[in-house]
Structure formats: C-alpha cells, structure tokens
Image (cartoon, rainbow, N blue to C red; front, side, top):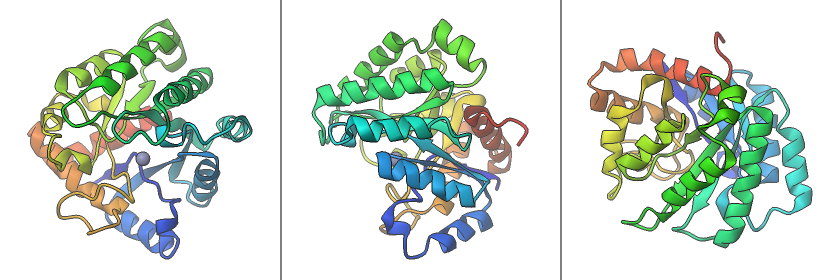
Length: 274
Ligand SMILES: [Zn+2]
C-alpha cells in the first residue's frame, strides 16, 4: 500500500538506538513521505538535520502547547529563522491542550498566535494539536476562534495558500461538527492511532466525511501506537493500520486510498508533482 506518515517525531531520543532501522522498515512498508515536526527549538533543529539526510522526508518547526511557557524569545528566534528553510514545509506542532495543562493556558494562546502568524507570513501550513478534558470541547472551540481571528478561512489564506490547506488538525480529536467547521475553514484533518481510543468514537465518522484532498494519516510516533501496532514505542510503519481502518470507514479499497493520501500530502506540503 502507498503510504505517508504526516506526523512522526523521528528525532525523538527514543529513536536514538535504532533510527536507521526504523526508517528502513518504514520504506519497506510502503511509506513515501514522512513529516517530522518539532515541538521546541532543539527538536525543530533536529528535524531539519534529520530530513537533510533523507530527502524524501519533510520537516516542520514550531512550539507545542506543552512547551509554550518554556520557549523564550531567543529560542523562538532560532525557530523563526529556521522556518524559511525549503526543507521546512509546515509550522508546528503548535495548538492548545486544555487536558494536560503543562503550560498555563494564556501562554498556550500567546504561543499559538505567534506560530500561526509565522505560518501565514511564510505560506506554510500550521500543524495543530488540540485536546480538551474527556467529554469537553473548550480547546477545540477556542482553537476555531483563534484561527478565524488570525485570518484562516478568509482572504489571507486564500491568497497565500490557494488550493492548499493552511493548517492541519493533527491526531484528530473532537466532535464531528468541530471537524466540519475546520474543513469549512479549508483545513486538512490527519487521523492517528488516537482514533481507536475510548472517547474518540466521533473520529470514525470524521474519517468518512473528509474530502480526499484534505485527508492525511499519521502515527505521531513514538506515541499513540494503534491496536495491533508495536507495544510501547510507536513506529512510522504502523501507519498502515490506521490507513486501512480509514479506508474501511470510507468504504474504499486500501489500494485506492493510498494514492489519494500521497496526493493530499503533497498538496499539504506544497510539493505537488514530487
Ligand atoms: Zn506530535
């Protein structure tokens, strides 16, 4: 099956012992693209260094909501400078996490705003993490407000991005109407092994309704191993489990979904025809 992993933290230290073997296994499993997002200055720089050795991979640089209060202006300056590198195709991951509040919520919003502004300035899509406590949706609703305020879904993204999505909801989590509101803003949606967890049942319906040019899949390795995937550390080759599940939800053969995923990824990353 042709596959992509739109979100894989291959630079994480949990891959230090065997990173090359993990990459080889991903290639053998059919992966044609991997996007390696950063979460702070160090991991953003490491993402660019890693993809420099693997030209079929792309990097993203940015600051995760968990790190919002830890990244100072100096580190942000390094990230913003690196963002212009052509190997960097997106900004993130960033977003809002009201569930595990590792940085205070006001800091998360300030961080999100500067990541979104950088994405709009460079015409590179924002990668968005969003989680609310179980049974709630306040972070999702706050994210939509921030996106609209920043100009997503309006003239700014229309002129800067054209047909490309200006952001992706990574590792989708939330109600179906939240997904629809994000799609109305032109966003892409990426589905991970989180979809299999209790409380994430709406993602099955979301997987069926996303237009094929807005649909991505990911592992979020080393996190979120899907059922049937590795115990403990997740790996990019396990994206096939999630991709096959998405194909079932869409009632299409997995072999037909694969090329659509590659095309949607290339549109998202701004590398059509590659
Ligand atoms: Zn991530």
